[in-house]
Image: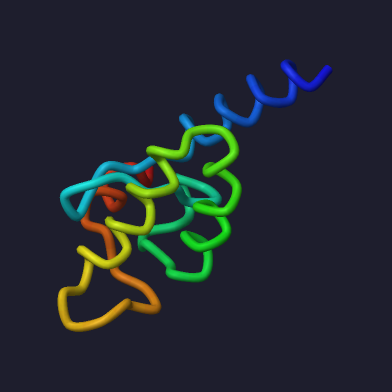
Length: 85
């Protein structure tokens, strides 16, 4: 049962992954979220550290890379604009 949950969680995070800002991050819904949100990224990093530690680190690195001045609350992601129908 734990293996099924891990596979399902990995698949969910894979579907919700966005490559932008020189790295990767995850959004709750690729069709509706057009930005990287610090709040979401924090929780995604906490979740993915148990599944894919490399994703957790990349999530946080991407969050900081999206704004070099400080940690942004949100950053509009042009790559996600193309996913909306």
